[in-house]
Image (cartoon, rainbow, N blue to C red; front, side):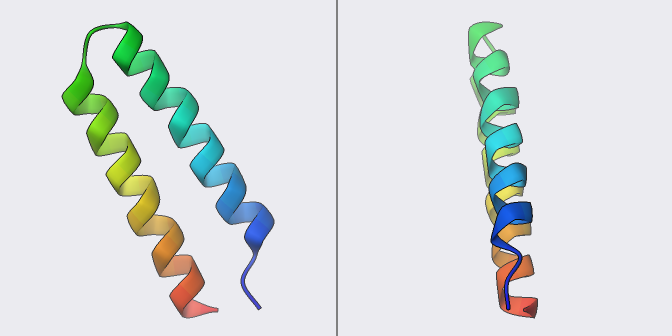
Length: 48
């Protein structure tokens, strides 16, 4: 069974980090953070 709590924490933290990057004027960094979090959580889901 997927660990939804872990996936939520990963995505929540990534969104927080991405917002900081956007506020700092670094949209590409924000984009990369979101993409990596999505990849990681999809991988965790598929492995479960």
